Length: 432
Ligand code: ADP
Image (cartoon, rainbow, N blue to C red; front, top):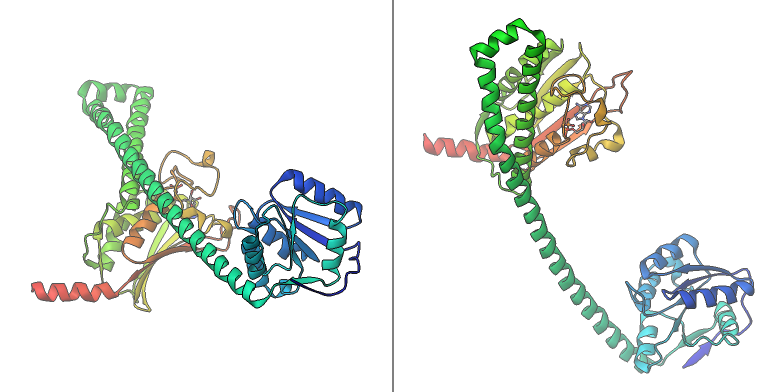
C-alpha cells in the first residue's frame, strides 16, 4: 500500500459526514470530532448519506461498510460518479478487517480503510492526514482482484434485489386481486337487499293508499320522496363502486364499434336536459371540426362523457355555461367539456383523477348529483380515466385555479386515438 500527500492535520473548520447506522459509533465519533472543532453530520443509511452529501458537500466522508440499504462501497461508487465528489476523501471506518473487504473497498473508490474498534488516540490524526491530501492506494494486481470481487458482489446483490422485488410484486398483485374480489363481493351482497328495498320503495310510491297519504300530507310525501331518492343514490354508489372495480382490474373490456360523435354528444346531453334546465345552465356544442365517427365502446364513452358533464353541472353555479367540443387533432379525437364554474386548483390537476379524491371538503356537497356542489364519492373521474385508458387515450384538466368568487372555470379533455377508427371502418367495409 502506498501513501501520497502530506500528513498535516486538517482544518478544524472542515465538515465531516459520517455514514453509520450504529448509534454507539455515531455518538462516539461525533463527540470526538466535534470536540476537535469539526462540524460533523451523521446519516444512518446509504441513501440518506448520498442525499446529505449532495446537500452539504462535506470535506471528508467517513463510511461504514455494512449499512442497512446500500453498502458503504456502493455509496462510494455512486458518489464518485458525481463531479463534486471526484476528489473528496472517502474513508472506510468498519469492523470488516479481511483483506478481500479492503480490496473491494479500494476498487469501489474509497481512499482509506480504518478498521474498528475505533482508536480514539489515532483517529483524529488519520482524519487530519486525509483532509490534508493523503490517499491510500493498492497495486494494480490487488485492485484488479478487488474489482472482480466487487463486480461479482454488486451483480449478486442486484439479482437478489430483483428476485425480492418480483416476489413482493407477486404478493402485492395477489393482495390487490383479493381487494378487488372483496369490493365486488361486498357490493354484490349490498345490492341484493337494496334491490328489495328499491322494489318496496317503488311499491310505496305506486300504492293507492300511500299515494293518497302523500297527497293528504306534505310531510309523508316528503319522507317518501327522500327515502326513494336515498335508495336511488345508494344504488348508484354501489354501481359506481362495482364499475370502477371492474374497470380498474381490467375486467371491463371495451366492445369497439363505430360511434357517431354528434349522436354520442346529443345522447349524453339529453340525459341531463332536466337538471340543465332546472339549474338554468346554458349548454352549447362546438362540433364543426369534430371527426364524424370514432371507433370506441359507445356505452363506456357515453358514461365517461356523462361523468364530465355531470361534474360541469355540479361545479358551475346556476346560470353558467357549459360547452362540449370535439375536434380532430394529430390523429386523435379530442372531446372536451368546458364550464364557467369554480375551477380546479393546479395542485389538484392530477390528484382529482385518483380514487376517492375530492378537491374540496365534502361537507359542502349536497346529496343531489346535479345540485351545485352535489354529492360525489370522488370516483367519477377515476372511471373516466380508466375508460379513456382502455381506449388507449389520455384525460386531463386545464383550469387557472379554484375560486368560488371569480369562477375561472375548467375544461376537461379526453383524447382518443383515431387510428382504430380506420380499423373500424375496415371492419365495416368487410361486413358490407
Ligand atoms: P365527485 O364524485 O366528488 O365529483 P369526481 O371524481 O368526479 O368525484 O371529481 C373529483 C373532484 O374533482 C371533485 O370532488 C371536485 O373537487 C373536482 N372536480 C371535478 N370536476 C370538476 C369541475 N368541472 N369543476 C371543478 N372541480 C371539479
